[in-house]
Image 1: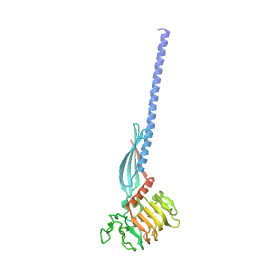
Image 2: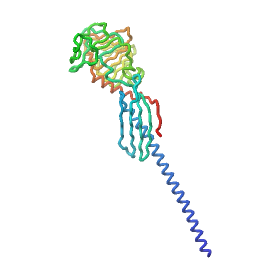
Image 3: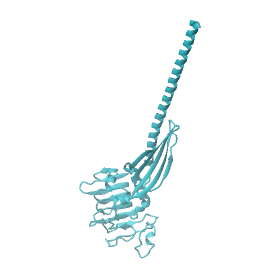
Image 4: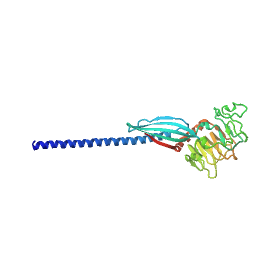
Amino acid sequence: MTKRGAVLIFSLLVVMVLSILLSSFFFKSANENNLVRRYISSTKAFWVAEGGIAEAILDLPSTCTSSTTNSPPYIGGYSFQTNTTCRTTIESINYFDINSTGIVGDIRRTLNTVVTKGANSPNNFQFAIQATNNICFGGGGQCKCPKDATCPPTLPNLGADPNKYLEPNYSPSVSGCGESPFHPCYQRYDPSMNTQALFGYKIEDLNSIATHYTSAPETISGVTAIDPSDGTAKITSGTGAGFLIINGNAEFGGNYVFEGIILVTGALTAKGNGNIELHGSVIVLGETDTTDYINGSPLLYWELEQITNALDVLNDAANSLVTIVAWKEQQ
Protein backbone atom coordinates (compact mmCIF):
# COMPACT_ATOMS: atom_id res chain seq x y z
CA MET A 1 0.00 0.00 0.00
CA THR A 2 1.34 3.40 -0.94
CA LYS A 3 1.56 6.34 1.38
CA ARG A 4 -1.32 8.00 -0.45
CA GLY A 5 -3.56 5.00 0.15
CA ALA A 6 -2.68 4.87 3.83
CA VAL A 7 -3.35 8.59 4.24
CA LEU A 8 -6.70 8.21 2.49
CA ILE A 9 -7.78 5.33 4.67
CA PHE A 10 -6.65 7.17 7.81
CA SER A 11 -8.52 10.29 6.69
CA LEU A 12 -11.69 8.26 6.11
CA LEU A 13 -11.39 6.74 9.58
CA VAL A 14 -10.97 10.18 11.12
CA VAL A 15 -13.98 11.50 9.20
CA MET A 16 -16.04 8.48 10.29
CA VAL A 17 -15.05 8.91 13.94
CA LEU A 18 -15.83 12.64 13.81
CA SER A 19 -19.17 11.91 12.15
CA ILE A 20 -20.05 9.46 14.89
CA LEU A 21 -19.05 11.96 17.57
CA LEU A 22 -20.98 14.79 15.88
CA SER A 23 -24.04 12.55 15.48
CA SER A 24 -23.81 11.60 19.12
CA PHE A 25 -23.57 15.26 20.14
CA PHE A 26 -26.49 16.12 17.83
CA PHE A 27 -28.79 13.43 19.19
CA LYS A 28 -27.79 14.25 22.75
CA SER A 29 -28.47 17.93 22.15
CA ALA A 30 -31.81 17.15 20.47
CA ASN A 31 -32.77 14.87 23.37
CA GLU A 32 -31.80 17.54 25.89
CA ASN A 33 -33.79 20.14 23.96
CA ASN A 34 -36.77 17.79 23.98
CA LEU A 35 -36.37 17.24 27.72
CA VAL A 36 -36.21 21.00 28.24
CA ARG A 37 -39.35 21.51 26.15
CA ARG A 38 -41.19 18.81 28.08
CA TYR A 39 -40.00 20.30 31.36
CA ILE A 40 -41.26 23.72 30.30
CA SER A 41 -44.58 22.21 29.15
CA SER A 42 -44.83 20.26 32.41
CA THR A 43 -44.23 23.43 34.43
CA LYS A 44 -46.84 25.25 32.38
CA ALA A 45 -49.30 22.39 32.88
CA PHE A 46 -48.71 22.59 36.64
CA TRP A 47 -49.55 26.28 36.79
CA VAL A 48 -52.47 25.84 34.41
CA ALA A 49 -53.82 23.24 36.86
CA GLU A 50 -53.30 25.74 39.68
CA GLY A 51 -55.22 28.28 37.59
CA GLY A 52 -58.02 25.74 37.23
CA ILE A 53 -58.20 25.43 41.03
CA ALA A 54 -58.36 29.23 41.36
CA GLU A 55 -61.15 29.33 38.77
CA ALA A 56 -63.06 26.57 40.58
CA ILE A 57 -62.73 28.44 43.88
CA LEU A 58 -64.26 31.55 42.29
CA ASP A 59 -67.21 29.44 41.16
CA LEU A 60 -67.75 27.57 44.44
CA PRO A 61 -71.43 27.52 45.42
CA SER A 62 -72.72 28.26 48.90
CA THR A 63 -74.67 24.99 48.81
CA CYS A 64 -73.30 21.43 48.82
CA THR A 65 -73.36 20.78 45.07
CA SER A 66 -70.85 19.48 42.50
CA SER A 67 -69.75 20.73 39.08
CA THR A 68 -67.39 20.15 36.14
CA THR A 69 -65.58 22.77 34.06
CA ASN A 70 -63.69 22.34 30.78
CA SER A 71 -61.90 25.51 29.71
CA PRO A 72 -61.52 26.35 26.01
CA PRO A 73 -57.99 26.13 24.53
CA TYR A 74 -56.17 29.35 25.31
CA ILE A 75 -53.46 31.05 23.25
CA GLY A 76 -50.48 28.75 23.42
CA GLY A 77 -52.58 25.59 23.24
CA TYR A 78 -53.15 25.02 26.94
CA SER A 79 -56.39 24.31 28.82
CA PHE A 80 -57.65 22.85 32.07
CA GLN A 81 -60.35 20.50 33.31
CA THR A 82 -61.78 20.74 36.83
CA ASN A 83 -64.15 18.57 38.82
CA THR A 84 -65.58 20.01 42.02
CA THR A 85 -67.31 17.62 44.41
CA CYS A 86 -68.93 18.59 47.69
CA ARG A 87 -67.69 16.07 50.24
CA THR A 88 -69.77 17.08 53.27
CA THR A 89 -71.14 19.97 55.32
CA ILE A 90 -70.07 20.35 58.96
CA GLU A 91 -71.33 23.17 61.18
CA SER A 92 -72.39 25.35 58.22
CA ILE A 93 -69.07 24.81 56.41
CA ASN A 94 -68.96 23.03 53.04
CA TYR A 95 -65.97 20.81 52.24
CA PHE A 96 -65.16 20.57 48.53
CA ASP A 97 -62.76 18.28 46.63
CA ILE A 98 -61.31 20.02 43.58
CA ASN A 99 -59.44 17.98 40.95
CA SER A 100 -57.78 20.15 38.32
CA THR A 101 -55.83 18.89 35.27
CA GLY A 102 -53.62 21.29 33.36
CA ILE A 103 -53.08 20.34 29.70
CA VAL A 104 -50.23 21.64 27.51
CA GLY A 105 -49.85 19.66 24.30
CA ASP A 106 -49.55 16.01 25.31
CA ILE A 107 -48.44 16.88 28.85
CA ARG A 108 -50.96 16.63 31.71
CA ARG A 109 -50.58 17.35 35.39
CA THR A 110 -53.37 16.85 37.92
CA LEU A 111 -53.69 18.53 41.30
CA ASN A 112 -56.09 17.54 44.08
CA THR A 113 -57.14 19.96 46.81
CA VAL A 114 -59.70 20.14 49.59
CA VAL A 115 -61.16 23.57 50.37
CA THR A 116 -63.81 24.93 52.73
CA LYS A 117 -66.41 27.63 52.18
CA GLY A 118 -69.26 28.86 54.35
CA ALA A 119 -72.67 27.33 53.67
CA ASN A 120 -75.84 29.40 53.57
CA SER A 121 -79.26 29.33 51.98
CA PRO A 122 -82.26 31.66 51.58
CA ASN A 123 -84.15 29.01 53.56
CA ASN A 124 -82.27 30.22 56.66
CA PHE A 125 -84.26 33.46 56.54
CA GLN A 126 -87.95 32.86 57.09
CA PHE A 127 -88.92 36.16 58.71
CA ALA A 128 -88.95 39.87 57.92
CA ILE A 129 -87.19 40.35 61.26
CA GLN A 130 -85.62 37.73 63.49
CA ALA A 131 -84.02 38.59 66.82
CA THR A 132 -82.27 37.08 69.81
CA ASN A 133 -83.98 39.72 71.98
CA ASN A 134 -87.51 41.10 72.32
CA ILE A 135 -89.39 42.94 69.54
CA CYS A 136 -92.05 45.56 70.25
CA PHE A 137 -94.30 47.06 67.58
CA GLY A 138 -96.18 50.31 68.08
CA GLY A 139 -98.02 52.94 66.08
CA GLY A 140 -98.21 52.05 62.42
CA GLY A 141 -95.11 49.88 62.30
CA GLN A 142 -95.89 46.81 60.25
CA CYS A 143 -94.31 43.48 59.35
CA LYS A 144 -95.51 42.39 55.92
CA CYS A 145 -95.08 39.76 53.27
CA PRO A 146 -94.18 41.01 49.78
CA LYS A 147 -96.85 42.45 47.57
CA ASP A 148 -98.53 39.86 45.36
CA ALA A 149 -96.69 37.03 47.10
CA THR A 150 -97.13 34.73 50.07
CA CYS A 151 -95.37 34.52 53.39
CA PRO A 152 -92.83 31.71 53.82
CA PRO A 153 -94.92 28.50 53.81
CA THR A 154 -92.80 26.86 56.52
CA LEU A 155 -93.71 29.33 59.27
CA PRO A 156 -95.54 27.96 62.32
CA ASN A 157 -99.31 28.40 62.37
CA LEU A 158 -100.12 30.71 65.28
CA GLY A 159 -103.36 32.24 64.06
CA ALA A 160 -106.96 31.07 64.28
CA ASP A 161 -107.05 30.73 60.51
CA PRO A 162 -104.23 28.39 59.39
CA ASN A 163 -104.16 29.92 55.90
CA LYS A 164 -104.39 33.55 56.96
CA TYR A 165 -100.69 34.30 56.79
CA LEU A 166 -100.42 32.72 53.34
CA GLU A 167 -102.50 35.48 51.77
CA PRO A 168 -100.61 37.91 49.51
CA ASN A 169 -99.40 41.08 51.20
CA TYR A 170 -100.70 39.89 54.57
CA SER A 171 -100.07 42.50 57.26
CA PRO A 172 -100.52 40.76 60.62
CA SER A 173 -101.49 42.62 63.72
CA VAL A 174 -98.23 43.17 65.56
CA SER A 175 -98.97 45.96 68.01
CA GLY A 176 -97.39 45.60 71.43
CA CYS A 177 -94.61 43.41 72.71
CA GLY A 178 -96.52 40.17 73.17
CA GLU A 179 -95.20 37.03 74.72
CA SER A 180 -95.20 34.57 71.83
CA PRO A 181 -91.73 34.14 70.31
CA PHE A 182 -93.15 33.28 66.87
CA HIS A 183 -95.30 35.21 64.44
CA PRO A 184 -95.95 34.81 60.71
CA CYS A 185 -93.60 37.71 59.99
CA TYR A 186 -91.14 37.80 62.86
CA GLN A 187 -89.40 35.69 65.46
CA ARG A 188 -88.18 36.98 68.81
CA TYR A 189 -86.14 35.49 71.65
CA ASP A 190 -84.13 33.10 69.50
CA PRO A 191 -80.82 32.80 71.39
CA SER A 192 -79.65 30.01 69.09
CA MET A 193 -79.13 32.46 66.22
CA ASN A 194 -75.54 33.19 65.23
CA THR A 195 -73.77 34.30 62.08
CA GLN A 196 -72.03 30.94 61.60
CA ALA A 197 -75.35 29.10 61.39
CA LEU A 198 -77.07 31.73 59.26
CA PHE A 199 -74.31 32.78 56.87
CA GLY A 200 -71.58 30.16 57.26
CA TYR A 201 -69.10 32.70 58.70
CA LYS A 202 -68.25 34.25 62.05
CA ILE A 203 -68.96 37.95 62.51
CA GLU A 204 -65.24 38.80 62.30
CA ASP A 205 -65.02 37.03 58.93
CA LEU A 206 -68.03 38.95 57.62
CA ASN A 207 -66.43 42.21 58.76
CA SER A 208 -63.16 41.29 57.06
CA ILE A 209 -64.78 41.34 53.58
CA ALA A 210 -66.88 44.45 54.13
CA THR A 211 -66.29 48.08 53.20
CA HIS A 212 -66.32 49.97 56.52
CA TYR A 213 -67.82 53.37 57.40
CA THR A 214 -68.16 55.20 60.72
CA SER A 215 -71.56 56.57 59.65
CA ALA A 216 -74.11 55.48 57.07
CA PRO A 217 -73.28 56.61 53.53
CA GLU A 218 -76.07 58.04 51.38
CA THR A 219 -76.00 54.97 49.12
CA ILE A 220 -75.07 51.46 50.23
CA SER A 221 -74.17 48.55 47.95
CA GLY A 222 -72.24 45.30 48.14
CA VAL A 223 -71.06 44.11 51.56
CA THR A 224 -70.99 47.15 53.84
CA ALA A 225 -70.26 47.57 57.55
CA ILE A 226 -71.03 50.57 59.74
CA ASP A 227 -68.93 51.03 62.88
CA PRO A 228 -70.61 53.87 64.81
CA SER A 229 -68.22 55.77 67.04
CA ASP A 230 -70.85 56.25 69.77
CA GLY A 231 -72.25 52.72 69.52
CA THR A 232 -75.42 53.61 67.59
CA ALA A 233 -75.68 54.01 63.82
CA LYS A 234 -78.31 56.63 62.93
CA ILE A 235 -79.68 56.05 59.45
CA THR A 236 -82.11 58.76 58.40
CA SER A 237 -81.94 59.07 54.63
CA GLY A 238 -80.74 57.36 51.50
CA THR A 239 -81.08 53.97 49.84
CA GLY A 240 -79.22 50.70 50.04
CA ALA A 241 -79.00 47.19 48.68
CA GLY A 242 -76.92 44.11 49.33
CA PHE A 243 -75.59 42.97 52.70
CA LEU A 244 -75.36 45.51 55.53
CA ILE A 245 -73.62 44.92 58.87
CA ILE A 246 -74.18 47.35 61.73
CA ASN A 247 -71.63 46.72 64.48
CA GLY A 248 -73.64 48.08 67.37
CA ASN A 249 -77.12 49.50 67.75
CA ALA A 250 -79.13 50.65 64.73
CA GLU A 251 -81.60 53.52 64.65
CA PHE A 252 -83.64 54.01 61.46
CA GLY A 253 -85.65 57.19 61.00
CA GLY A 254 -86.73 59.64 58.32
CA ASN A 255 -86.74 58.29 54.78
CA TYR A 256 -84.73 55.17 54.05
CA VAL A 257 -85.25 52.19 51.74
CA PHE A 258 -83.07 49.07 51.83
CA GLU A 259 -83.23 45.87 49.80
CA GLY A 260 -81.33 42.85 51.07
CA ILE A 261 -80.16 41.57 54.45
CA ILE A 262 -79.38 43.78 57.46
CA LEU A 263 -77.37 42.29 60.32
CA VAL A 264 -77.43 44.27 63.59
CA THR A 265 -75.16 43.15 66.41
CA GLY A 266 -76.90 45.36 68.99
CA ALA A 267 -80.50 46.53 69.38
CA LEU A 268 -82.71 47.93 66.62
CA THR A 269 -85.00 50.95 66.62
CA ALA A 270 -87.10 52.01 63.63
CA LYS A 271 -89.30 55.01 64.27
CA GLY A 272 -90.89 58.12 62.82
CA ASN A 273 -93.48 58.90 60.20
CA GLY A 274 -91.16 59.04 57.23
CA ASN A 275 -90.75 56.43 54.54
CA ILE A 276 -88.80 53.56 56.08
CA GLU A 277 -88.97 50.34 54.06
CA LEU A 278 -86.73 47.35 54.71
CA HIS A 279 -87.18 44.68 52.04
CA GLY A 280 -85.64 41.24 52.59
CA SER A 281 -84.75 40.19 56.13
CA VAL A 282 -83.40 41.88 59.26
CA ILE A 283 -81.30 39.87 61.72
CA VAL A 284 -80.80 41.32 65.20
CA LEU A 285 -78.27 39.75 67.56
CA GLY A 286 -78.95 41.94 70.58
CA GLU A 287 -78.55 40.92 74.20
CA THR A 288 -81.55 38.93 75.40
CA ASP A 289 -82.44 41.58 78.00
CA THR A 290 -82.76 44.33 75.34
CA THR A 291 -85.70 45.25 73.14
CA ASP A 292 -86.09 46.22 69.48
CA TYR A 293 -88.72 48.92 68.87
CA ILE A 294 -90.63 49.30 65.60
CA ASN A 295 -92.70 52.49 66.03
CA GLY A 296 -94.32 55.01 63.74
CA SER A 297 -94.74 53.90 60.14
CA PRO A 298 -91.79 51.63 59.22
CA LEU A 299 -92.61 48.74 56.89
CA LEU A 300 -90.63 45.50 57.15
CA TYR A 301 -91.15 43.21 54.18
CA TRP A 302 -90.00 39.60 53.99
CA GLU A 303 -88.86 39.23 50.36
CA LEU A 304 -87.17 36.09 49.08
CA GLU A 305 -85.76 37.77 45.98
CA GLN A 306 -83.93 40.42 47.99
CA ILE A 307 -82.65 37.81 50.44
CA THR A 308 -81.30 35.71 47.55
CA ASN A 309 -79.65 38.75 45.94
CA ALA A 310 -77.98 39.70 49.22
CA LEU A 311 -76.59 36.19 49.70
CA ASP A 312 -75.22 36.25 46.13
CA VAL A 313 -73.39 39.48 46.94
CA LEU A 314 -72.06 38.00 50.17
CA ASN A 315 -70.94 34.73 48.60
CA ASP A 316 -69.08 36.50 45.79
CA ALA A 317 -67.19 38.61 48.33
CA ALA A 318 -66.57 35.56 50.53
CA ASN A 319 -64.38 33.86 47.91
CA SER A 320 -61.44 35.47 49.68
CA LEU A 321 -62.40 33.48 52.80
CA VAL A 322 -62.06 30.08 51.10
CA THR A 323 -59.51 27.99 53.00
CA ILE A 324 -57.32 25.27 51.46
CA VAL A 325 -57.04 22.46 54.00
CA ALA A 326 -55.23 19.82 51.88
CA TRP A 327 -53.26 19.75 48.61
CA LYS A 328 -51.35 17.16 46.62
CA GLU A 329 -50.30 16.32 43.07
CA GLN A 330 -51.73 13.18 41.57
CA GLN A 331 -48.99 10.89 40.35
